[in-house]
Image (cartoon, rainbow over all chains, first blue to last red; front, side, top):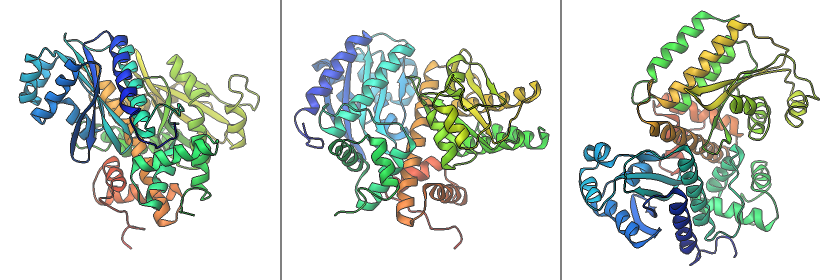
Length: 215
Length: 240
């Protein structure tokens, strides 16, 4: 599908991702929620209905690991919710524990200053994730971020983790007065259309040759 | 060769990292500066690995494009990547163009005028989280005591990133590492915005960002986040 053409494909793709990750981790389930500016916009996808309801508990309580993950721009990993959560999120912890949650691992869907939401991984037994499980969750969170930026899994090219890509994103944001998500989506769409890598496009933007003005 | 006065300053700064409000990215840049000074090196850079083992540029004593490219090249190949993979220091007193270990890195490094390369692992117990690179334009052999000092500085960087001397939770490493990697991305985004608005190159934009953070006593990553979200702007030059 055309990049940036937001539509019904993103949510099913993220639901598939939640189910695949759940299976791979062998845990209770996975849910993805989106943030909107200040607070959170709510749950958009989950591996099953129970996980969707579990994720909604954070929003009912107005607190929880996903709020902290957004605020601190980093994962918030709580391998033992009773021990670590009772003081941090008293309201959320009591309802979540009652609903059968023993551990929550929140991974922000972010690209620098841009945070689209959080992927929450739930377990019904306390205990740390292994390095492999953390790696799988981070990879899924990155994929979910790309799906949300593209409006679908169509492009498939990974966001290139090079400083120049982010510098160029900042230049596009400043020149067009648009947000981080729009700027990155615009760059990826343009790179796709011109058959350039994102890095090659970024270098052209930095050299002042591309995308900085409306023609 | 190693300046003890300079070293003691580093360790005072390390003590400062154990307070809540410390500026990680600024500290890593300072550490790169100090390491370059104590080892008389042309440029020092720090790379951190993500969970997939990909190295990412974090901080350098020189933001110059020629070195930055060499740091980033090691995403796929180079002494820093080898050091990260093996957990052992890599010391190349004199790099040759045709070094078969790094068919892409070696000629590019020589083209940029780099003659010697050293890489030191950033280790936490049995895990390697990144590596510290030392580049120089002259052939440089480190004495065993120099290797120990620079390795100690690499260890200091690790402590600063983790912000805890003894990690009781395994989760803290993942949380801090991912936070640090993301902070670097925010700073690159802010550099691009400032560069465009003020019509300067990204290195100058970074100097201005850093200067303003010091001047207004806010953390570099927090200031960058405010610039990107549009809640603050950076003056073209401090005190003007």
